Length: 399
Image (cartoon, rainbow, N blue to C red; front, side, top):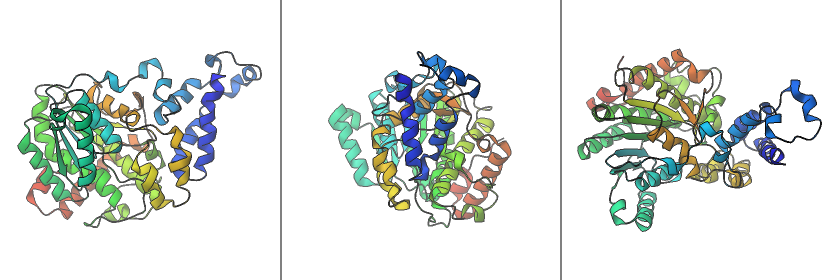
């Protein structure tokens, strides 16, 4: 029976969640959504249609948001939430910037943007070798001309002055940016400090992208005079596991070792709050600039196959090996990002695969918390970056 097949992933996830905390969010969602007790009598006999199972639509959406490969993940979403990479429109004449665009979900975005004829694509990442391999693969598959549309720039997002300089280099090479995808991230790994003394998860996943976005705002605003500009920040459903006492009140709070998963979760909450901040403060003055956050799903990337073992040497195998058949591919994982980057007409949303708009956690919708985060962001960046350019460019404080 199809309904039984749909429920099997819930059991797998609940079992593997005991091995690694990365899966608790989806396991909880699946275990709490399925059935309504008021309809329990209907479930005693054979079930002939999915419509007879309360919550089946919610189960299907949860699976669509998170799983792939042997499970038809994205295909399970309701009709109004369907989207695929094939549906990405032609991007001729447009310019895009993708952080972490040389591997994983970022490469899924890069590949799609080029396939859809983006005029120029800036990829920001740290590894020369990985970037070279990505560009080589693009040239082999799509041709030399397509590969030559890629401009790779080495950028460590935890170094905010370097990030600012990288933004200026981009500005020297283009007069427009239609798409900015803030995708690069430190995954679920142990607590470390960046060279500037800030928690490395927040330094890369939040602060670095704020610096980059802020420095690129002049070009983004200019481009918005002629058409839509879309900013996408990669969040995660794991933002729901941010510690309940998170206040974003001080640098000391940021630098508290919460553990690998809470550290990551908090940085993904910050990405969501920053997106909503931009939507509140930037979009009203520049209606053509749309800022949205996304959840990519559980995706087959180095974060979920290698990096997870840094924090969970043994338990990580539940994710890297046990979940391997159910993870989305890098292209399936790029679907929600590409929807947000090319199709949505709204701002301030949290978009899950394939194109499901979710509310997010209570903290993700806490305006006061978001304002406090950005106030702290400005103070920390000003303190840690002594260059005039970084001070002027970050963060966005327009009201």
